[in-house]
Length: 380
Ligand SMILES: Cc1cc2nc3c(=O)[nH]c(=O)nc-3n(C[C@H](O)[C@H](O)[C@H](O)COP(=O)(O)OP(=O)(O)OC[C@H]3O[C@@H](n4cnc5c(N)ncnc54)[C@H](O)[C@@H]3O)c2cc1C
Image (cartoon, rainbow, N blue to C red):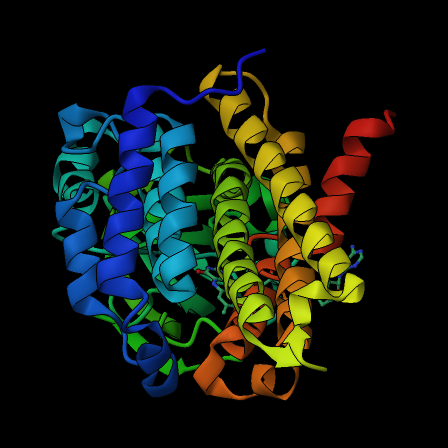
């Protein structure tokens, strides 16, 4: 067992930290308030190689391991949770399935610009009647000569408003349910693709959570990801990796909230002493630090198992379950340590508190993570 990072992994973490401190921390509160999508920061992330971190260099990715990805994503999310999810979706939910399941032609067309950060991608699985039960998709794709005609509405699509390409799941054989779903990659510019409502979210307000509508969209059969009717597997396998990313995002949010609480506890004086001298506050800080450490270890372990090429589905679910709860609890305590100041925007922890909650919901709710973990425990 070796807990040390390689020199390269440390350098990547340092580069991400520097970028976050310079470009994200000073702007995150404003983006949160205005809900402005951080286009310029995302472009710079791409130039740094952070949008296609695990993609092979052949396809203009950075060719790095999952541990490096986790380290960078934690730092970016510490700076701005919205930017964290934008980065996570492009890496985990878009580049990964295109690289794993796309043909060389699809990789040439779609993966290269997405991995290099010249374009941005989004993942379209959820629908009004297909949330946790993602197999209940109503979006259809019907064969027409060499093409498929896609019809349906996807909701809650992160990066929706900014994306150039969408990974889309559609039913190609409704009678077969999950065994009749196929995955496609679809350009924003195709006729019939349009954007619907942008949601007014509790947190991660700068990421664009949109409805994406596909109306008689003609898609070449060459845009299929993987085999016909095997798309549900693509969706689930992709989410396994995505969960490691969301665990890292949760860690970044928790770390940001913790750092602010630790500082505030030493600055704020009541009863003529810093509040950090009270045991009640010390125990909170000790508990927060321990939980963050445990969440980080679970997240890095999931990344390590993935990098070894072993089955990491349960480890990823455990990491997301624990890290997301940690983010919510740590941000809650950070608000508490700030007292009334924690409840106002100027002190930032209320934003961390709002940002943390989504990590327990997307890419599988915490209840779904428990289902995944339980299924690995209870056989037959
Ligand atoms: C800001 C935001 C960004 C998102 N980004 C994306 C994206 O980029 N792409 C995308 O495809 N989707 C995205 N989503 C959708 C997200 O993944 C879903 O909201 C999530 O999977 C839950 O689905 P649902 O909202 O329909 O809730 P439901 O599935 O209706 O769940 C409601 C409640 O019931 C519980 N529940 C459901 N089934 C069970 C069960 N079997 N046992 C126990 N409890 C259960 C859930 O845990 C939850 O507490 C996003 C959502 C949000 C809010």
